[in-house]
Image 1 (cartoon, rainbow, N blue to C red):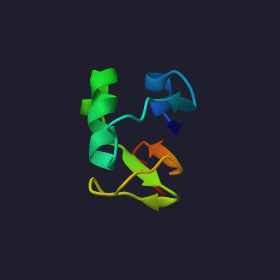
Image 2 (image 1 turned 30 degrees about the vertical axis):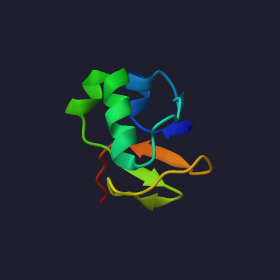
Image 3 (image 1 turned 120 degrees about the vertical axis):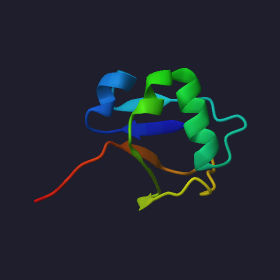
Length: 77
């Protein structure tokens, strides 16, 4: 499962794309748990999960074909 990483999150993940084995990941909630398992400091950061271009809830289902992105908090003006 390839995850696109944006903004200051790239420092934590070490780049703009993060590869994660997708076994047993069927929802955004599963994804977040697995990411915190790999990168515990992520638990202290607020971020959005976007799936197929739409802000995702924890219950959003994930599939092998899902396009996933993590976005840090931002504000506009």
